[in-house]
Length: 241
Length: 102
Image 1 (cartoon, rainbow over the protein chains, first blue to last red):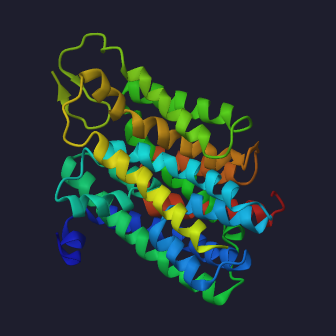
Image 2 (image 1 turned 180 degrees about the vertical axis):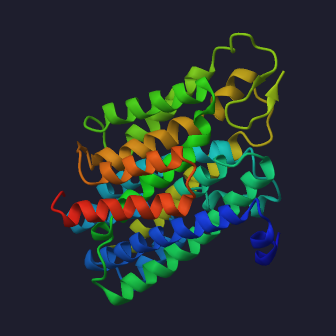
């Protein structure tokens, strides 16, 4: 691994460090809300913190807690939360091919595979920065999410992130992260199709399923490119002979 | 809330991540599959953008987030640093809410 000071001195990585810390602070605000909401829904402080430590996928946790708070059954809370968690499996298909090392190391990486770490990683140009961005963002978000959960669970009613517009911080961050994917026509096609599929399905399918269906937009990659030789790959920038 | 719910959710969430992580790792895949996998970030991150901008549960809504994300698109296109993009989007959304737009 690389010492934090070395990360900061690397002019290529400093923007990644700043970006992941920014994102982690926004994540932290939602972690506080989760802590508050979970305790309000009847979870103990220990259960709330264990959930953030082990589940570590915010949308699933918030959804499970809101179902329980609304008087729903444990089964429906679990079902909805697991559907939301399934998208991390899709991210992991991509990240599993980029992160190397021992099984233990890759199991840790799997636990850190979430929206933020994946999106930050794929926005980088070369494989080294992709890996470092993944680890930096995953670790920063993990620390912030768990500290904030504990804080929220202990303190109860705190700030409402929505008042500060922090719910818009996430789509704004994803705009920045998807931007490099739009350099190629095929990337633009997959992004456009994914967005349209997701929006079209939001009203008709359970929360979490539209994102999974949006992943089917990658099928635009099936046909070989017109003028196949020497094309530039949509994501990695590698020339594909 | 029961411990069994907490632990089942933890097992399921980690299971999804771990299966995905090891399923295709280190395998040689047909070029068409490689091309599709390379497009996952484009498709899914674009879907995250529109979901987090226009949805509230299962409802499609246009609210103050649209202004914030719109500002983000303009700033990203102008290559403004990430931190500025995120802070500006949150600030614009918060101000729009202050001004009475939910």
